[in-house]
Length: 235
Image (tube, rainbow, N blue to C red; front, side, top):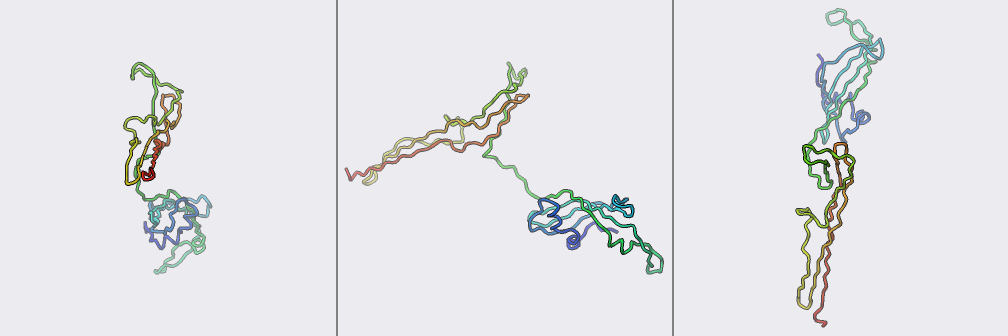
């Protein structure tokens, strides 16, 4: 009976982390070989290498211990020479078994499949990039409208003036005069919005669609404070 699982210490003698790093990309740092699982019965067939061999194909899944647990799937192609010897069993009967030369001449090649890792995925809000889709059509109604191809469209970020419900909060401006002890403090604040920014320019396709990707300007304008101190004791 062929076991369908192999202990980590035995598996580590057959496949090493150095072997994986040499043949696979994405092998985690500090990884170690865990258990080896045979996922299907070995398939024995005529060798594609030599008529003096028989080939056994063994599908496997190798578990890799790391900070991010990983699995490698693949197939081992074993070449076994057809060289046998006769021996006597415990009952004195003649039996046939692979010769010592055949056992020492067994070779194997590895077809690496997928290296998969456990992880957690999440969708996060993208507050930097802006994606916009626009379809331009012509006609007297939605039902009869025809797409306009080859129309150049600009996507603008409006800052001058900013539209209602804009993400930029315009600060209060004006002039204040405060008397504190011997000083008269005059503070004047002003705000100058940025000019409208062109985020992207696109041309509509055959269906009238234009897709825009632009980086939003996080600067809505320039807020200026001018503060003047007047010493009343020097008058």
